[in-house]
Image (cartoon, rainbow, N blue to C red):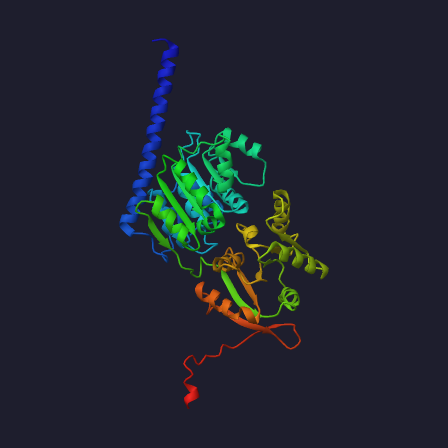
Length: 442
């Protein structure tokens, strides 16, 4: 046998050995995860499991610890073993409870770096959330530089993203519309994708991406698992689960003290004429350094930002008509503390992850109940204290009561009013209503 043939034979043997080693490692991780579920079931919400106790690769564990995480949040305790074991899953969890790490660790654990094809796809409703997810995955993979992660979204250059995809990658984070654009231009092949995650599934499907999401999933012929993470379980989420999932595990995490945002909620009865003065006085009297204000329309967003600017507030606005470059510039300045007040619409603000937002002001009553949950979830992050204010008029009183009741915040949200000098907020005492008008008979 010639030296060339011997070298070729040795190379083949080495490749076979490496493939076998990777397979054995994956089987071991899966068996360990399955055993965790058999022994303990889905981990208890209050178990306080540490990351070292899970079947996580050493490099990923090292990255998790370097990011400052030690104890798993409830959603991480429940989701990580299930996803490592390859289960389909529907996970309902409040915003800001560590969902990205919950699906990021299993995705990275299952990636085979020797196969430079998309093996996992994470879909998100907005470009901001997609960027945030991609950054979190990069942080989790910081000690595994061979894993390539590409983020594609609308509003950015198509050609640059195409070059990144054609250069090869293992994980794709994308908005549904842009992923379909790349597929039509033959820039991506998703037929070998095994793991699919829909993040903020309720919002994504409610935004009109239902058909795109179904088409994308249909293209993934070798899909082995589909997981959906959502703050609420809508009809569309259940439909996707029924069509594409098999014996899906259902995980529901209720807010607990350590994992849920610590938010003091207040509602303020006001008028259209007084809203601006009320918002300005709250920011000044409470000494808030970083505030987000939510409006229902881009017109109201721009108008309110201009009014606050005239009152000498350091303010900017974020809405869907801005270019991607403008949105990136505004978000960079807000994260850097160069903007004190950010006025935004719901869609534009989805995916904003700033840990030190002092307060959220709902300048307009949200059109959708879920929007209230996502709005107030922008504050009280990373175990910090936060505050939320809901402005409403007399005509909106019934709508607000319904909103708070359906989002399970009725008892937590306290009614407040300004004192005589309009300087400080005063919490109003809750009067017990005589629901059955019994007293009128005595």
